[in-house]
Image (tube, rainbow, N blue to C red):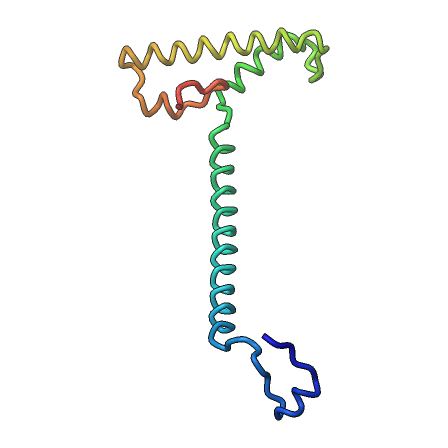
Length: 135
């Protein structure tokens, strides 16, 4: 393929000499646009689906009213004046008590379910701090 300067371009009535194939140029341009559009569309859909999954995961992390009641009860044992503040030494005790209470609630719910007092749907939809019932 020979390069063309302005003088030879002018001498040939402003036509290009051996400057590529028009069909290949059109094919390359259209295929490039289609492939790039396809990639960006897939990227856009992937971002939307990832955001949807993230929001679903966050929604599954709800804490139920029963857990809040247990936490409030345990907190009130350590914050007798009701100021809303505790010392950092008491935080470990609160967490230990909360874990113990929630474990007992979850165990009681499992026992009720095995005895037939609690149906599986209600058990799975109850929200515990440590939601071990959902796999």
